[in-house]
Image (tube, rainbow, N blue to C red; front, side, top):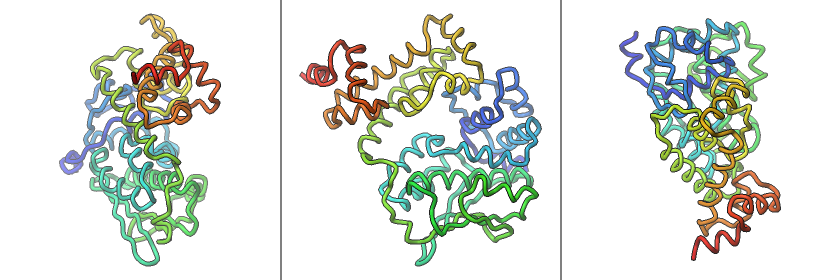
Amino acid sequence: MAGQTDAFFITSSYSRIIARELRLQERDLPALLRGTGLPLLVLQPGDQTRLSGHQQIRIIQNARAINNSPLLGLQLGRQLQPSAHGPIGYLALSSPDLLTALQALRDFLPLRIGFARLGLDLSRDWLKCTLQLRLDAAAVERRMLLECFALLLQALVESVLGKPPEGARFEFAFPAPDYQSSYSEFLHAPVHFSRSHSQLVLPAELAYTANASGDDPAAYRLAQDLCHKLLAEVPSESLSSTDQVRRLLLSRPAGAANEEDIASALFVSKRTLARRLAREGSGYRQLREQVLAELAAEHLRDSRLSVDSVAELLGYHDAANFRRACHRWFGMAPREFRQAANK
C-alpha cells in the first residue's frame, strides 16, 4: 500500500489547513506530524514541501486521533475555498465561465494534489464533475478525502455562479455514514450514496454561465500576479516572525485578514505574535502598512488601473480613506503619486 501511496504528492499547505481547523497551538503540532518523519517546518506559512500520499494519510489519521468527530472531513472541506489552492484557485476564479473554471481546476489541480483527478463530462442534460483518488487509503480516510473534494468543488462552483446551483446533486461511491443527516449543514444540494462514482452533477445549462465572482478579471489577475512576485522576493529559508507575517499578508486579499487571523495561522496567540514581532523590531500594524504601501505603489505605477480600481483592490471602499492613506505613505494624493512615478 505504501509504495503506491508514496507515488503521489500533495503540498504542505493542506496540512496547515488541518492544523488550523483543529485549533492547534505550537505545542500540539508534533502530534499532528507523528509518524510522518516531517519537521515542524512544513507547518510554517510559506513552506512548499511536497508530502507523499502516505504522509498525508498519516496526518489525517493523526487528526482523527486528536479530534475524533465524524464530521472532520466535512469540516476540513469547508476550509477549501478557491484561495486555498494558490494560483490554481485564482486562475479558476478569473475564468470567463463555469466550464472554463472547472477545466482550469481539472488541468492544474494535480500539480498541488498529485493523487487527485477531476473528470468532466458535458452532455446535453448534465455536466458531471467526477472525483477520482489515485491512492490506497482505508475507507474512513478515503471518505474524508472525498468529502473534502466535494466541498472544494462546491466552493468553486458557488464562487463562479454567485449562488448555490439549482438542480445540482452530489453522488458518493460509499455507503451512507451514520452522520448522513449532517451533510445538509455543509453541502447545498441533495446527496445520494452507494453510487457508481463520487461526483457533483450539474444541469448542463450552467456550464457557460458567466463568472459572477469578479467585475474586472484583468485587474484581479494583475493583483494576483503582483502578490506572487512579491512573495517570491521573501527568502524561503527565513523563519523570522516578520517574514512569516509578511508572507501571510501578501498571500491574502488586501484587508481580508486581521491580526488575530494572522496569529491563528501561525498557531500562536495574538499576544505571543506581538511579543515575537517586537523582539524583531517590528509590529503587525507596521508590517500591514508596509505591504499596503508596496501594493499601492506598484498598482499606481500601472496605468491600466484607475485610481478607484486600485483603492478597491486594496480594500478601500471609500476613496477618501484611500487618499488619506496615500498621504500617509507617500506624502501626496494617489493621482499625484502616479504622475510623479510615471514621469
